[in-house]
Length: 140
View (cartoon, one colour):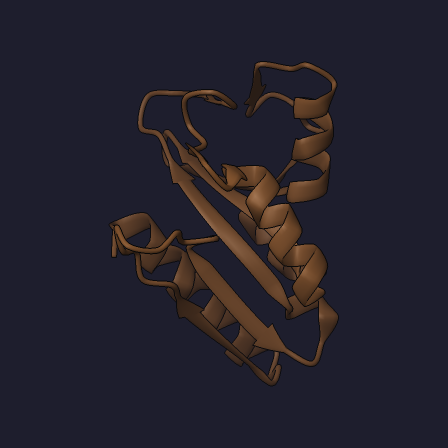
């Protein structure tokens, strides 16, 4: 597990425990023999915590490129596969993005809207797309 995924798992677990939510968070293992739909899953009866989480960590970048930072496979693009999974499972999809020691959360739906509008990337400066991780977790 990379350090950012581990940090995210512990951060969500701590908030779930503090808010006394009935939920479990776990990591999906990566394998070259089957595709991994996302990095972390949260199971809960509370829909605010029923999540599929994709983690992206870029040290020196302040944006994510749709063509370079999200994978493509014969099943389709990474974001589109995650969207399908969320629609079938009823989960809310979110993207965690860490850059320069700042962690933000974006809604999968909003990020895909930007991609479908023809945007090439999504930057940290776009306040409509991103929320600070602590702000997001406090709103849940």
